[in-house]
Length: 399
Image 1 (cartoon, rainbow, N blue to C red):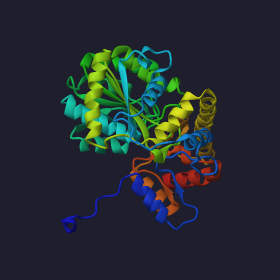
Image 2: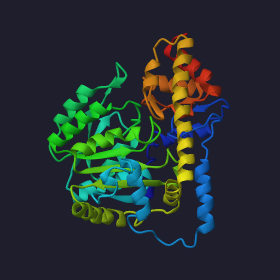
Image 3: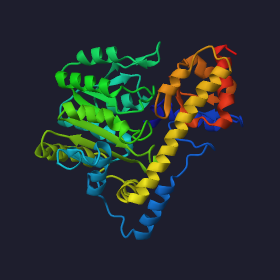
């Protein structure tokens, strides 16, 4: 049977990483995969994470299974981080949380829950969105459609088109939103725009799933949750997927969460019981180590302060690279104005480069970018900025 199979196409993002590794050019640059890089081009282990691991290894007495939904302490701390310590949903029982294998695992559990337990058949994703959203949701049996999000001509949110699209969606279908640092555009709604979005979602009775993969990498932990706060002010049911890959640097530990918000504690517990069935028939129970790191850091005031300081340094570096990129492109007489990149947030920028530009950059300059034109801003650094900008200007025909 295996001989009947032809090679599957490579993953549009991770496949580029494989191609990059095989490229023999010493000056090649990878701006494709969504991994944070420091000014030396490394993906560091955060000092707070290292200290948490030291404590965990020293005190570990067992490697027995976690519960299906993970550690209750992990769930409590995740809710506090998402909603804020002072918000009722952090403590009143109307929100329940499952520890999942990364944000992708949380999205798959959410998709299974929507399809199997709520009889949702279709989910709407932003145009554009993260490459893997469509694949994860389709694999769970959901039909995937797209709503308007990005105004490519103006490099901004198409808020009117977004609201119009949402108003056309039939009631009880699902919508996937990015909480902050929209991937790939880097463009987020303002709090006022979020308020309007929440109103339409409530009016249309749409099932809302929020992908919260980059909390803390936009403007700050609390600031990046502004959209979530606007949604929960008008919606009494919500699914929120968190990831700690980026903000904790726990990429290979697969630490994520799915939080379900319900009208009552009783409804929340009922939803949790069904979501646990989705977990049990998938991966049974979550991995421990990454979640234990998150718990150790968030529960200790000093470690949390250290982590928040490191997170701010990551955020500041990304924003500095945005500014430096725009300045360098202007200095190189680029045929386009790239100042819009400074208004975006998070690790990614929708650069406006088309697939032909991307191919030229890869083949002629050894610069790897996703075909959509998405650039990992965190992969830029002062040492490679001039080379990247020169190559883009040459590709665009400027200079």
